[in-house]
Image 1 (cartoon, rainbow, N blue to C red):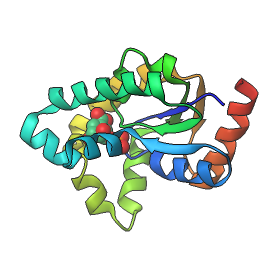
Image 2 (image 1 turned 30 degrees about the horizontal axis):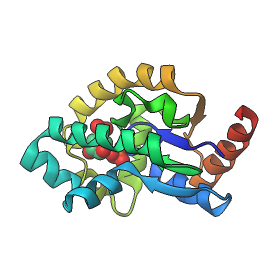
Image 3 (image 1 turned 90 degrees about the vertical axis):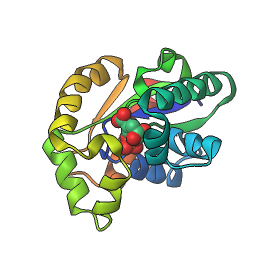
Image 4 (image 1 turned 135 degrees about the vertical axis):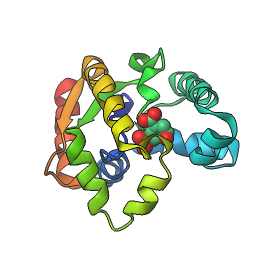
Length: 171
Ligand code: S3P
């Protein structure tokens, strides 16, 4: 089994879809933000505050080299900016979770833990800036993706099933 790399904008549901995929397959799952938080023993938000974004991007790059070399049969969910690492294609099949910006924000705001979800993401504190970032990134996400899943109005479970079906076809 080739690795699957889940990419997509903040809040699009990468974590929730990953949790559903592992319920319905033999993949194990890891998350690049979780790896960074354990490496650093501090939260992403604190890393941004204490070291700045460039330092965080350097950690993502280190993680990407380790993933390419050492990780197999795994579903890798990534932070929204991880796709910029140079070796993404070498890590596995790239799956984009796609949704319009307004739908992503609606989805976060409808979540019972909305405040927490917004607070832990430094690049989502200013929604105007986040929208600009979305506009800049979306074509880049699409250009990299082997598989695209439109998550709009679908449950995480539906997205996971679609993902597994498309990955099987793609193999
Ligand atoms: C980021 C997305 C975050 C996290 C960091 C930076 C980004 O992950 O990696 O705050 O640049 O889009 P999520 O996509 O899981 O929110």
